[in-house]
Length: 78
Image (tube, rainbow, N blue to C red; front, top):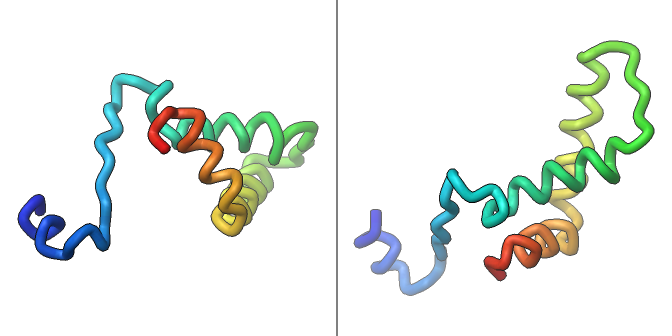
């Protein structure tokens, strides 16, 4: 894999995200955003509604580069 990534001249970059350090993992900050902002004050009728709403909020975050960039900056990886 390393040889392939080296052969494409920086088209794809990799970053090592250690699993034992949640403060260095930008996904942890995305989950925190989801819980504290996107789903704040959300009252569900059933677990299926929570699953659907959480999935839709995460998909909407994909189209908001400021949120994704903020997660990487918070982790100190940007």
